[in-house]
Image 1 (cartoon, rainbow, N blue to C red):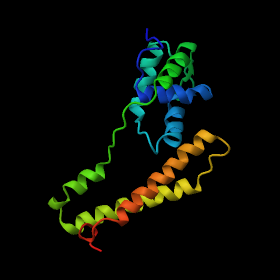
Image 2: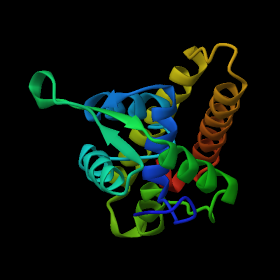
Image 3: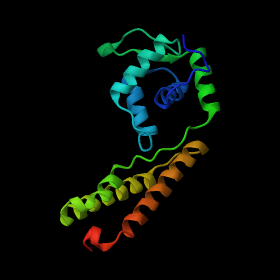
Image 4: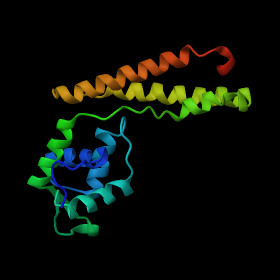
Length: 173
């Protein structure tokens, strides 16, 4: 059985954190995760179900009875709360930037200039759209959600500023 001091991976810890709000099915967790952490932490449906199974086996979660469409609610156990608290107490690990666009830019000399400019314009538009979504979001009175939303806004503004400072040769301006 997993102990509270065993290392949780960030995906498992995120699911435990979301379950502090009450029992949820796998589908509800996927949906909630997409909204709550999707902009800054990616996880797939298959990861969620794999983690739910592993955490149930480790005693961190309790699976409820199967309901409609074979869905079953998962409830956080005391052991799961302790494991989450231990994970949170450790603090975050080293940050890793995984920004696939930077690989495209690094190797951009191997693309036709028009294609690189098209990729950059599309990516810039996606970041502008994400910023507009953040600007429209209302985190309510939750200071933690406000802090994360503020980071998202500042991040998107910084990325847009980076796009706007790219040499014209990359963007065909």
